[in-house]
Image 1 (cartoon, one colour):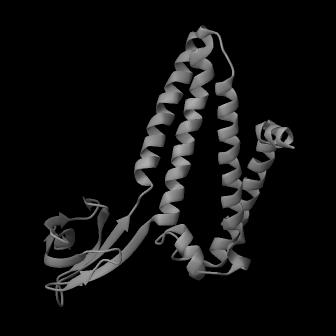
Image 2: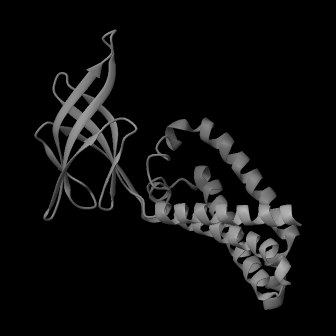
Length: 238
């Protein structure tokens, strides 16, 4: 039985079959999302597993679970394929050519691990702050808005927003600046500017995130690049 499962996971035909299933399932999802925009509107603003837990409609979300299961199969198949390749012996002149794809596999697995951690343990919260107001971050710590300034262009339109934020967590106290496309990272949190206004009173909408999977995804991407370069060099030499 074990040998049968092992051969099943190594089979290229099996991988192609699941690849086609993945495409079909993703196609179904691409139809369901536009047809139910109100329901799926928050899926990009909340970690996936939390969103699924809070929006329990199997008739609309079954395809997401199907994609997760198929991706889990791809991960398992990649692990088995990599182990099988590493157990084989190759001539020294073929090592780079044969091992580079396994390095690429390892990079892909780290990327998948990063996405899994983000979906399962990540946090995204939008916090609306007014000047002098202090609000708690759900995972711990507090935020306060110290100041908001708006730079206008020569036509009188708002061109840039600058928010001064104070962050406290235990004995830690820091002040930092947030601007559009210029986030900040403090401890385990990422802080992103969403919007700000000075009228009728100063306020700012700040997104607070925890992304435990980002370092793993970055590591995976780096490993994947090195594996790709090694494979290209080996093929060029061959």
